[in-house]
Image (tube, rainbow, N blue to C red):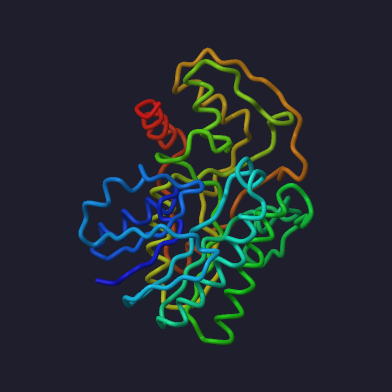
Length: 310
């Protein structure tokens, strides 16, 4: 049994990660301040004697008495709607939060895992995106608070590894979806599902031909677990390389929901990435990462959860 600290553990990805680690027989300390996470996401976990919850903002100093084997920093405001609302808190979670978590990892002689993002690549000029691509990011644009918080986080993680020899993993997470997504967080899949379930117009930005690559949450979590067990420090993309445009996504969601919704076109937001697809060659090589859940199957599972939790 190992002890993991998961910051942002009540969020979408964090709560699934906590659940998987407990299932694997580990002890989990979940830390969250509920700015975008939900107590409902971890309600069932609280009955597990190996689960502990701490209400705390990672932007402030972190003090934990017990031993920790691995610090997993997943606390972040990740959706455009929310980081536009809380730009300073987003920057602080990525900068001060990462600094505080690294300090704790150093104190405890623990491994460190950073949940980074495909947004470090910005609106990419290279396609698909490999880990050695430096990105095309506007630091003062509307997405800059999130993009740069993660780019800084990656830089300080690298500095702590080089200076203090901490075993670190940086995971660049591409678009992920599934149960427990906040239905009003503004991201495309929960947006479309909610609109379709209530027969409201599906809001498509631009002409809808911009692409994304969507990874089901179970596949992502399995990749993260494999990466934890990988011995070496590394930076790796995790996501599903199957690329689809937004209009094709609307077709699948409308078909599954049997919705009468129409399409409503809105202006494309500034700095919106036109294409997004991970090159997962490295993940395949080092941890045998292979997403298994096809988009249509994953959407069915996700829509079922949204229907139950209307």
